[in-house]
Image 1: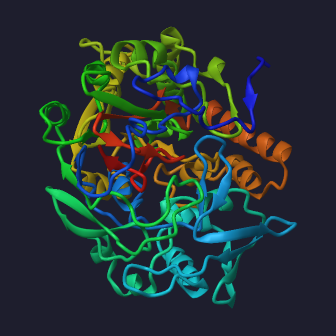
Image 2 (image 1 turned 135 degrees about the vertical axis):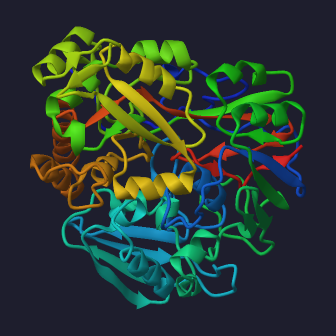
Length: 533
């Protein structure tokens, strides 16, 4: 067996990884520190203008994990814990302390005093219980999957609660740092799921949602009485900005133009070709490689892709280095596993991801797909055509992937739709390919995506992979968890259950007047310490 690199507990970021330029991903294990440093004494007031890449269609953190939504709601909803982006350590936030039972199945939290939701209600143990009890009623996809095996929450007193699971749950403590498990006021659950998507939920964060106008904007307003940031924050008390305005600008060129002309202070999701113009001249780039599941081709195991040989051909037919060299900047690098190299318990599976177009063609020949007159393979009179369902705006790599697969005779049809339509079509299984990466600093992203007893959007058949994923989450020691994670990744690649493409990054253009803007451990905007110089 080839030698592989294993990194069970690597640091997520190196301090100072990002100053005025984007460093190559290989030079740091994360990034996204302060965007612009201090630049003098912090000042209060002002409106931060953000050019956002898309209208998410839903803002409720319990129902969506889209980056475009979470960058807004992370500042509205607090969590029990926070994760240090430098070390990966879980630290206090709403919970001032927390302990885990000896068997890893129960987690006890002691809450801080004096914390309230924006509706004035206390953040107490009953509110935490209500949040989790309602979350498990949702389909087990995204945040609800963090609570698989949930046995309930026991309230000891107003400040003390214990969350119990059927078995050990190695990922849960890290999950409590995410906005998906953020604590909501019980009043939130009187609203319908649709209304919560439109912003009818209540958190305890430093900002409140002033309004959300579909296809236009989402505006956050400072909460004057906020006084309970996580222990990682550089100041205490209310946030410094009066307001944060996210304007939805789907066209990448329009976002960069708005930043260049001063119409916005931050342009999210820079295209690789646009990065260089914002490295200096009054701007900087805020970037961090994403931990978790790398951007892949996610494969629907029904229809053409039920054939393992066809899936294996796609896996071999991608030139990952060529893809990065032709489309991306040095903020990105080729995938070397299903997991990114900044994820705890990552192992290098580069040998399984070698570009092998001849091998891909042989597999398609063996599956009965013969080359047609136009270069697209055919079988029983039909072309080898796959529909790729994409949430608009289309990422820069998609056409390049399309061109690469055409070289082995696969016709990939790109279908870009609005994010809300994308979610609907994905749930219905109306696709051959999608591309679902999950940014989270824990290997349990594998279970979020590939566990057949969960949402199983890819229609995977039950297999030994389920056992490996159950072992991964139930492990009570590092060695056992590493073995289970490695077994799961090896199975996924051996069966071509997904096609890893590249290691992604969040890359944003930022005006020099913006100070203290950070990315958290999951690469979401941390607006609490941000201010305008």
